[in-house]
Amino acid sequence: MSKTALGSWQRIRDSLDGYEPEKLIRLLREYLTPQVPPGTRKLTDAQHDAMAKHIQRLLEQNLGPWYTETGVVLGNESIGGYCWCHRFFRQKPTPNMSVEYNIQLMIDALERSREWLFKLDARFEALRHDLPSAPDDTDIRMLALADGLVSTLDITIQATACEEAWYGFADRALGWMFDALGLRPGYQAGKLMNKLFAFESWHAPPLEELRDSAEKVAAAVVEDEGRRHTHKR
Image (cartoon, rainbow, N blue to C red; front, side, top):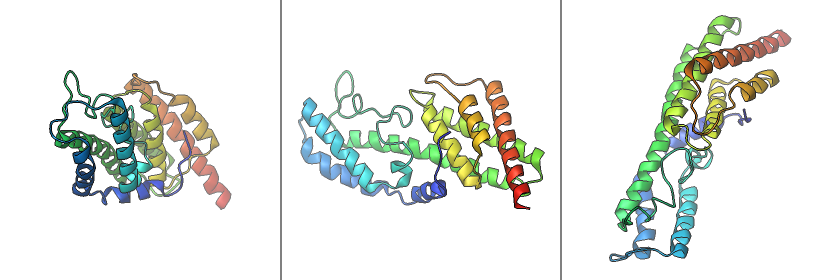
């Protein structure tokens, strides 16, 4: 599992509330309308690529950490369902050259990405309430963490459909879960996660296997916590 900076999830979560789709639609419309005037039948490759790059910059400049720090950039291969090659004025068999139609495709893809993040946040919030605060409650903490790992991965599996490189989003989601809980898995737990949560594109891990792996990782995390707690005494 890659390391997640402390407080990164809170920054991402806070930025979700600052999203203004109406503003974004206006900016997209202002740029695209003169680029694709009524009557346009097709874009050249050069026009298409230049416009796509401009919009990518526009999104990065106007959207918060929920977009710029999570990997859900428009056109990623795993989540959101948007592809610059086959969606952006290049639908098959006949391109739809409507500016409004193409803007809506982008907005819908962004909303699907946001839905994934909101579902993760709801799960993290519930887990915070379920997780005993006392480090000595090892059995209950282990079971709660295992449940959290399984549900976090399941939410990500559903959002990505295990498309190309979906495991990158799974890795991020697990890091955010621990960050949201204020936990920092130790070396052994991290090593175990890298081994047991080594997923592949186009393949969803069997639930029983996922549950077994989650319990082993949760036990390692709780054991790390116990050692830290003992040293602090």
